[in-house]
Image (cartoon, rainbow, N blue to C red; front, side):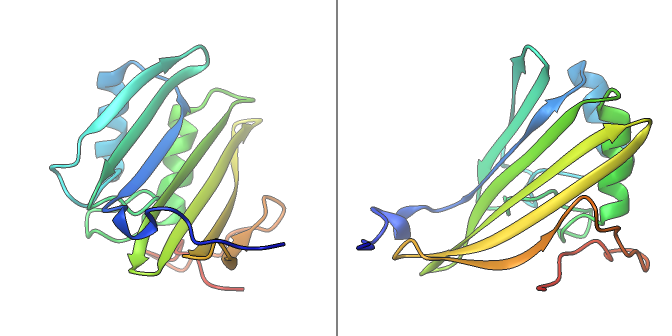
Length: 164
């Protein structure tokens, strides 16, 4: 296999995030995000777009403040407990929500994130994966956690991913 550089890799100026489907209406969705202090971007100028899908609403955001995962009020990655609690309000039983995104961490490396949230019998189960992508397209696993593996919470920010 021959690997070639990703076209225009260094010209991607900002991060991207897509979240959904989740229950609306939009005003209620905004209130629930604010309740936990969660945002799609650390930069308030980055606009959040909402689109309708047969299964619910899809949120998307692009801009320099987007990191590919939800942000807490301090501009850090949102704690896992806050994410689970939020998804418990946004998902009906049996539903799945996918949060995917990426950002350019440095000139020659992009970080891609994906999290899945399932609501089963009133409980939220989740899995996460984060990879670094080089200019040559090579991927390196940064961290991963499957739904079968319970989270360890030790206070605010404990949900941040740690390399395995």
